[in-house]
Length: 323
Length: 278
Image 1 (tube, rainbow over the protein chains, first blue to last red):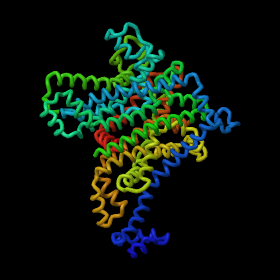
Image 2: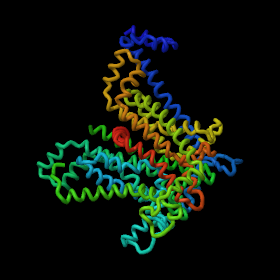
Image 3: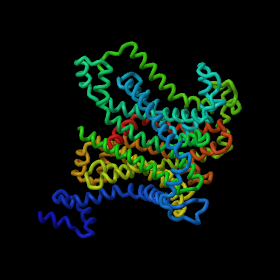
Image 4: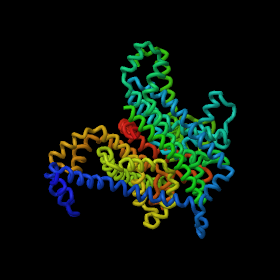
């Protein structure tokens, strides 16, 4: 024990000495720990430095702008204004619409993604020929950037030369072309369809992985008890994967909330601000030069999403407690 | 499931999965068809579902009227360097976070997770000012440094999941044999984890290849612009040139598509092993 204490307190240069005589490490556990700690610190340092300088510093600097008058068009007065930026955001007549749009965007994209993704996962659960190839092919949307997805759908939803109108008319579902992106109601539908297209795969893959971890014995037991397919689904399948499902949904909510790219490319928030969600509105304000207000909006997003994160981490704890 | 498949079940499965596949792949098909039409034929009715006259005019125009070749090269360099460095750095941090219990471990993970919740635009202004101070505006090095920082958190979380599938005993044995921790990591664990590392690298690469807003903000000169800035250029003009747009889109998507096709299996593993465990 005394030996340990002696060895545990090397002079500052002792780190080098310790490194040069690794053979003695096993007999002095405590010094070994100290040395390991230094190694671990060195391993973590590059990541911490990069994320600190290029993410956390600008984020913090950006956050304080939220409480200042900070407009690129007039930087002569950058005084502190307290919650002034927040107040002028809340007072803006379009703010209600934007919040409502954000909710519609998140829920309207999420629910079909979950339902369709779940169905795909259920169908993919049983092994079949080409299943691997199929999985690789439905992965395609993930290779495309959000902006490009927006552009693809903008072209397909084009009122005059768009393929969507053409197909709908050929099928006899509509008699005249729909002005998808210039009509507020249709524009919201169009951007949500694009987002659903992008997100189904994610759910399919996560849910499939969860389904595959449910043991066959559970299903065998259910079958022995004479449970039908529907009964089995609700009393075995769903409860077994509920935590994974909950986590995936929360993670996805954060991403969708924070995902202006598709809307930015398809409508730019138009027509007449009717498809703006909080993050596209933030882009608009940033482009107008009002960094103070944009940062205030960013803080609102961050706080909202951190509430979701709290749920996320809580759910993880519950899951671990289950095991 | 135990129930033997009925005919109806089998048919509905084929119909449903087939429909999903068609809907998923159709946008790609459509953009390819559009890009191969003669520029004038794109705006003619009725729509052709296959070009009447195959033409490479849109592609030729892209390379002769703009510096698209240069943009592609820039994107390749930036994405390749940034994703390689980010993967290497994340490998080290993921190792620490996966293998060791220490106070502050939760805080580090939390700090990484929070970066996923911040709308990038909050940092854009200060980042631009900082890069001006460093003299790194309109510089590939500057963009690479920022991309590395952006890739690290998610890549770390993903790689951490892969580490948990590799038994501790492996590196312990190597260290007893006299390997240092670093060489144990690279000689023993990395080879076993290669699929996971490849998947993380691909994920980073695709993210950097596709990144739009930072690139648009920081890169001004044609010799430094990346592909997404060129794509964004098509939208800012009053009329969108859908011919060039679709050709550019195809050239942007095809490389990532090819890589994804090879790596999708590992990416699936990485997502399901890493990000959901929390």
